[in-house]
Amino acid sequence: MGSSTCGEGEERSVKRGRILRWDGPTPPLIPHLNYAHSMIKRMATHGHTVALVESETGKQWTFSELCELVPRVSGGLAECGVGLGDRVLCLTHIHIDYTLVLLAIIYRGATCVPINPTLNAGL
Image 1 (cartoon, rainbow, N blue to C red):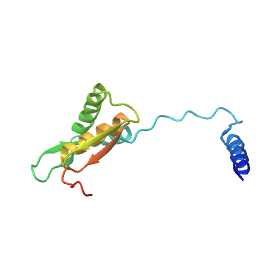
Image 2: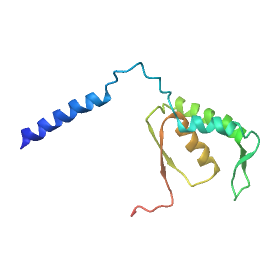
Image 3: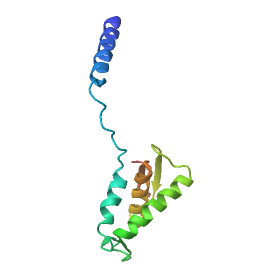
Image 4: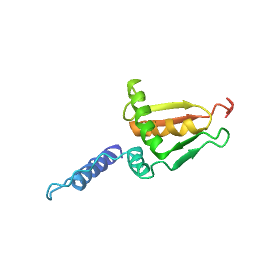
């Protein structure tokens, strides 16, 4: 039975190779897509319209401000060694600055791992 399973795996591998092989004309290049980059481009069209408001403090950010801040914070993350595919732990309460940090992490190509500081150890 073990060799049968191995044989099936090899057969699947060959079939998969045929599926992934492209015999037609050169396919078009697929651009690197990043959700935050796309979002920043869309936000830029809204200019000085308020994008975020923190209800407790009244702090506000416009779309233009976010378009400026997100790449800058992302650059700071890069200086700290954060790169594509990395995970960044965020131990913070949810507030307006968290949104900026989250977007900057995604803009950098990393993944945000949020940790709520109010959770107890038993969860």
